[in-house]
Image (cartoon, rainbow, N blue to C red; front, side, top):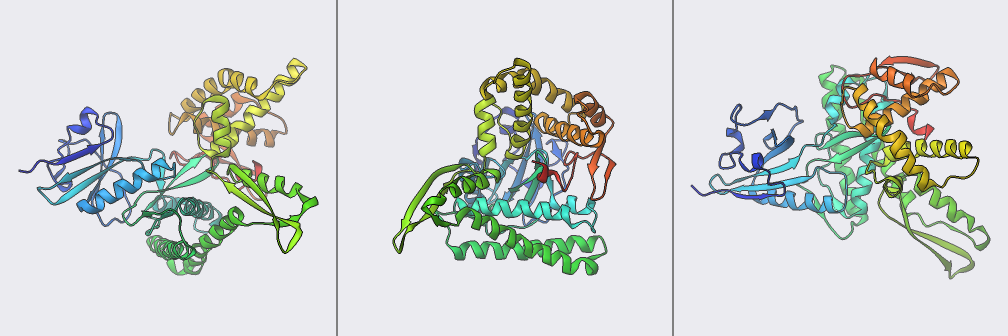
Length: 426
């Protein structure tokens, strides 16, 4: 028997000891600690294995495709793009196959599970998920990544504060280029729209209401392209204004920062045909403006949406310190005190209140959101203890269109709050 070739980035004892000499189809419990996790439609066999205290996703592939996907995922990781993280690839010459190993994306959800539990007559929830897909495509295309098979089955969703993040799961057809042409980007989006529409109609059929939702779901799938185009234009437009209107630069930078993008460089170039006019070109960095700022202040490595919420709490704490001291307290000093006195102990308490589901950072963000909602309802700041009690009871207020209502918190880790207005309050 020809021995398998192992390329493992996490060569932990239990992972190395798995039966790599066997085809993945022959891996059986209890010999292997398999976890039963539902997956969407897949061309290839996928199994989940728990070892060394972690959960790993294993996918059976032809050797050439496995190596290619592993290399693409490594490059996406280097670029810090939202995608599953590769942990290794094992070539099995005896069976002319290979196994791709990736880290399981903790706290993530498949669209099909979300679709089945979201009310069909409330499209705003689906819209937030599809907006996350559009944002992911913009980020991939900005970095020269052609996905080639974006679909509901190949995308996972996770919470980042009170916003959603989409992550690439399947990179079998993906390729990384120095840049993408407009034609490549549009082709990738055509694939997305077609796959998303088909996937949504298939899920609707499982709910026995495909006929009623057909036109709506197709329109929603087409809307992903509109969202993508608007965001792409915001990032790449080159506005023209007069020399005396240079304040427009600040407005443009602020708009990009609010979307989470850091601005690396600003260029103001006179227009030859009209010397009194300037063309603004902005070089935009990664979409982690607030996350990078928070990390510089506190050392916390969090998502962009989480960073927005945490910075809001930090700045409120800084204002409190200034009032108590009767003088200005700089942001760096406030951040050190906030991390020690507020963030660290409170995030552990919030995590415990939620049964330690999800991450402690996300639990803290949920607590802050619940506190905000309770305070709005009461007309004054209700404090942390009352918000913790609401989390513990799994009952928190949610903003409805007409009034403040009380809803039960879902037991799943995906959402303590699925509030349509959350982004508007940030």
